[in-house]
Amino acid sequence: MHFEDENGKKFMEAYIDGYQFGETLLEGVIFRAFIKGNKLKVELAKKEDIGYFNTLNTKMWLKAALECASNDDDIFAETLEDAEDGKISLILVKKK
Image (cartoon, rainbow, N blue to C red; front, top):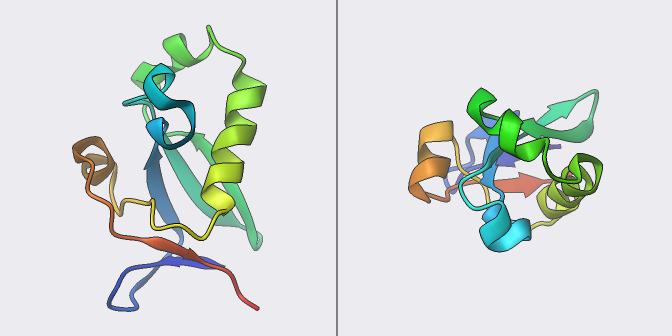
């Protein structure tokens, strides 16, 4: 399992804006999706989002982030800066 750009370059981490699954509630809250032990995991990407995120149902929203990241949709950014700018360039590739 890995993330991949249109040129076939592989990445072990990518970024997703919370808007993808939380709409305006999580707009601008960036999550880091990464592969660890052949499993997909997610976490907050920016320390400054922790305070706001902790006012929400964190377990539910982390689960939603993981479900969203598990889709094969083209929703990932290569860098945190790209995610903040809305630049999408990576997809999740699951080994068959």
